[in-house]
Length: 583
Image (cartoon, rainbow, N blue to C red; front, side, top):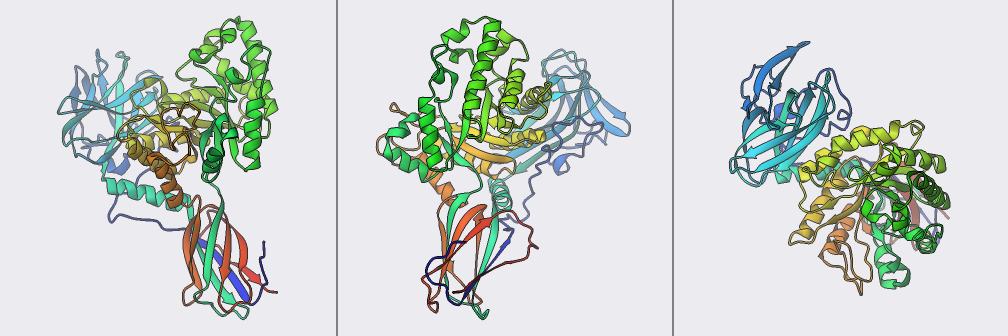
């Protein structure tokens, strides 16, 4: 407790409650399941989400009603252990499957789900929609198994109204595709926004109720209440570059907004050991000293980058045995040096897209790196960092299902079971598919590990600022996202793809204004103030974190009363906390 001035005749009563949030009348709640089911392969599928939505005969309980053949596939209605489903067989084209015609409405956001099985395991299956104009939209993908059902979840926005045809495809034409419990549910933009608002209110905020009373317990009306955010719980940050060390304007801009940072290049192998055997951590050290001074948490980025383009010449020239020795030296050097000083490490960067180390050291190279990392620093969270898992449904290399399979490989490698793994989603967007973002995170959450947005930016274009706001709202509202880092660290030459400020005075550009608006709206920075009502109460929804509450009243002899307050998720039945001030 921190007391300021004299303390006379005031009592401050604090009580926290869940904040109810915003609702749209008759809006269908969003179903986040998949977060509990996507990594499982079940003997029988669950019921279709939303009762199937606009899909006819979603559980196949009425034979083949509503369903037809797509391409040259044969279709059959089958039953196993009381469960009825549809099968596409005799396929000799990747798109040959079952299909159903639907009608899409422009401007609506569609969430899609289905339970899939294949006649042999490990087969990627994609849900597609062909519109009347001849365009194709990917709803989502799954790696189907045999003898059990996996949940495919995805979505898309409808850009035009009209007929469309749902079908499934797999490049392996030798397999039968089994489908059950299909759902296609439309939401208006207003309904989608209500999901975000309700989720933010539920998972990021609590309602705080304050009562001011005098020493005798009498309520004090018109007491002035000021609640200052000191430290938010949710990590919201931005990438940093060495440019900050010599630029006061950059420092002031960054420190007034963010609580976490990732160094853009300064911890990477090519920055710390440009010449073999000559390590130089001086720049990273200086940046880490700066962040420590200002209580900025730092994510380590990165130990290894699997892209061959970013390997130093001397690294490329090593034999497999020499590379194994050099990588172990690199990992132990950087992780031991910064042990206990970082909140996480991107141990392997872009391992689903690239395989430089695997091509030299064998298929288990990345899994081995995590094994070494656990031995070097078992207490630090270890990320697998990748792009296009939520950005592009068309990137077959990094679908949520394939990400989960890769993560499982890392976690089940002998000795890795005790590692603290996490999912890092780079999030380099061009045009965001908002329903796909949400459903993909649902699917990834099946792993049961922390999920961070690690390098968020949007390609330059006329809608860059609009898209940035849409993505930030969607990811912050998702109950399984535990941190967001923007990728906008400037250098003397400018920024990577997305600038938040100008590069001289660090005055906000439109993208920076969006960031500031959301920081204020979400209560991650700033001040909440007001006066108590006739019964001495003041109430406000506050983001989780640490606050300083001050109260003044004309009848008090003290200048102000100040109390620290920690706001965190609480049960509505929690008993009030009484705080008494007296001289």
